[in-house]
Image (cartoon, rainbow, N blue to C red; front, side, top):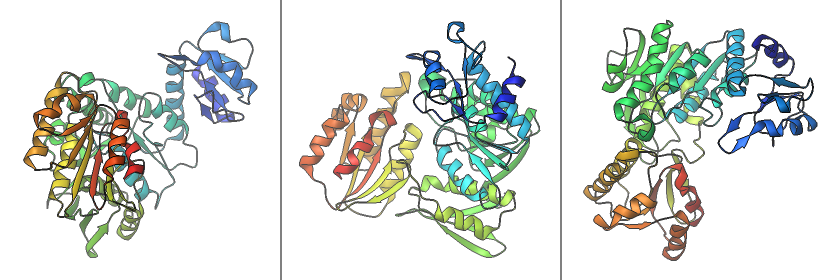
Length: 429
């Protein structure tokens, strides 16, 4: 069965699942494989539980006409999503970057929803499986698609662009992350640049922070919309404050317009301005832009401010790399409140640069005189004695210590890589 025939079936049964434990009636199951699982083995079970068809790539499992046998299930899923994207013919914005891409995607979606029926990446479904699923979740009522793209190896953004075929693109920034896969910071830049390259080759348009020299150096001679704190840009804004929450000022025909967000951290200024810029570009009223951005509430441990009975928490524990960690520490250090406390976790997937980058952060903490810091993870534990910070191998060990410490009336920054699971400490604070 070719893609056109499979797409005809999809149009009749337009729900795709890849998790055999989450069967939806009259859906199509794609039997993906991984290092530790083989979806082919569960295909029959999904059909018995309500799926209409199952796409498999091992002949022994295709026992009747409810099974669609293909050469490779993942390739089929990606091709199907591309076919669907081409059929819908809707504008698509691709967002990538080292930091802030999920927050920016959520902010842009909040703004564009004021005028368009949007469909955006759910959570961080931004890889070779997530992007196809994002596209397949769009339908004939969707007027604008917003697709987040993540990468940890060269070539991945190019591949995702060839699936989603975006018309517009935005790179939030480039920094040191996934160095284990990229090899170097230049490897990061070259991979993110694949979005610019695709749009240049396909007559698309990019939105760029004019103050980011790395991004400017990555541009081709392509259609570009600049934004930033500069006079000669399409969309200009000024940073006002970030304590405790971010406020920015935009210049408009209405005069000065202040946007009081629910986000913590001065580093979110660029993310908010990107959303303002997209809204302006697509002719959304500035009062509506303001309303959308002020109503957006961060979740999932990203740029959250949480007041508990005992403390005030600045939670940014969804992910961490040297760039985002340094920005968070610098921002926290400039805040004027007293009784600051930090809980920081290891930064993962940094390869040979890991020890050096963790030492750089310890040096930054020392220079900023942020001595009330607890560290979590194997890497920090091996290095902490150099600066005499208290460290724990595992977050569960830290939790025991926090129960004894019983912190009160503190302003606490919580940040680390997702694998450290720092969110587990929140209930103890």
